[in-house]
Image (cartoon, rainbow, N blue to C red; front, side, top):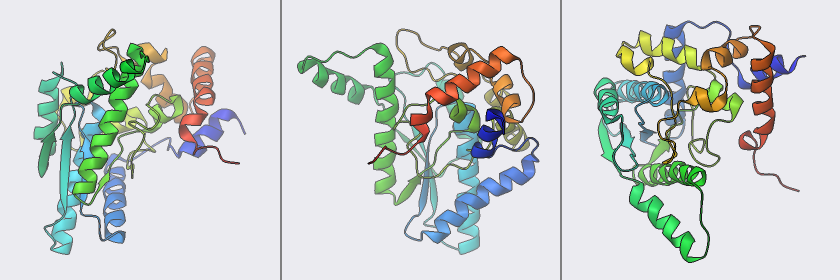
Length: 268
């Protein structure tokens, strides 16, 4: 079996999907987990203004609404958590996402003071971090806030990671990949767009250029520039299609180099 086929099998990506079926599957996945764990009453998603959190947030809100209706239990709720680092350049998109999702509750927490305080504490010990490391600090600070909100609300942190991020390791270890449940993990970027279109999402949100925007010195870098390959090419690879040899090598090299991000801690 080729490495491409092994990766596709491991990540569970389908070559062809029906968006309406995948929407139902994702929603049912969230509902069944909450029903099985009856002490859990909320879903929490960090809303960044990008495609992935838009999709995950909308699926989570629908799941909660259906649960309330089916169980006659109004204690279920969805919380959209906004976690900007200071002033976010695409705040208008974030507000458009919130308006599209119509969450039960919106919580806003500015993570900048906490990140800067952590960096100041390190400096007092003679440790000076780079801009790149500070970017990872931002992702991990968001994870900390997500779990605090979840603990207060008997909730689950819902992940927004998808197969195109997973294969490349394009996430912060113990940061944005640290979640309780992930309904869109088996979808690639292209398929996520199909689902959002089916859900009547505003076009500018699902056609938006993806960017993590974690670095202060290099703001608003597009993911594809950092990765060195387009999401469209990654998606084609994940769907089992033949792509150009250079892109295939880039993708497979990233996958192998980031295995540690997808594995549990090593033990004896």
